[in-house]
Image (tube, rainbow, N blue to C red; front, side, top):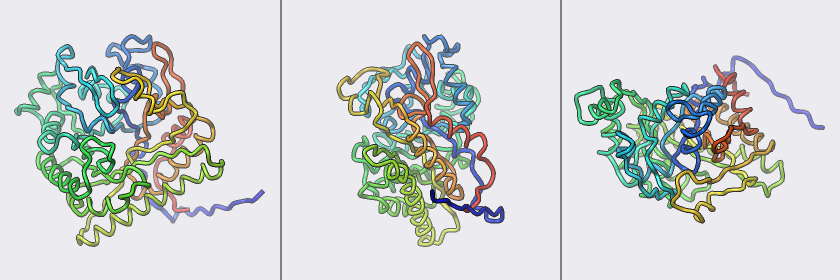
Length: 391
């Protein structure tokens, strides 16, 4: 057996871990929301219909922040549909996942859930079918104190104090042809820049995340980062990255080695960020929000493709994966990779929280059970704090 050696010296510090690196992601997709975090008829539901077993698992895992409401979902979402009297909220066909969105859960309910789960909300705005004005109105609803149309509407809906959401994502995966309202890099960069300027004019305390590449295999990577950041660099604080690994047809060594790709992905994007910094003669560093990451296994009964066979339902199962020990090892390696780059990766969201490629699975009308990948996440989230050493 070959033996390895690790030399550790406390003088070689890489960077301080931002607690938001232990985040997750809730999207209106499949059973993540409906019968995931919310199921009023379930024996575990509280008075607001939230599953207390899920809330307890979130707390025990050490999850610190949740990105919402998407994901591909956000590119066709009208946030106004999800506020106010529930009986008056519209039901709409949701185009990203071909479901019926009841809007029973919206921004105010999600904020209440976050408070119960003791996590920080991260919100995404729709830059697919909407744009600057909608983003500013959403920010006004959430963060403005009072005396304006949308802040007053929030108060009328029973929420006197603003939510003070700190982190906002400027769209989702806009480089992907699958995205509703897909844009090329130049067009997205200009829209994100102008949206960022307007949002920070309303609330200068917020932090903004510009869309980076959806995967490291995108044809436009890393040119997308260079072109978009040339427009947005002075106005945003983070660039997002997404990555999912599968490949069970590979041998175990090749499968587990995929975490090295993630590290190279991060290093490449850091290089692009620093190039744009030098090009613009800026004194500001840009950080990474790796706000979707996970293992897409093939041990499941349902896949995303199967949602095509039974469209236009609410909370129909999609991508409900059963993880193996091997999957959990790769999952742990990916989280370790994020920690190794803690000097530049400040936010990360495991995707998704519950039922779809998730750390926990709920039975509709029944109990919750934890997947193998829950345990390495919980160990690191609860104990991996402080400074990262460069080893």
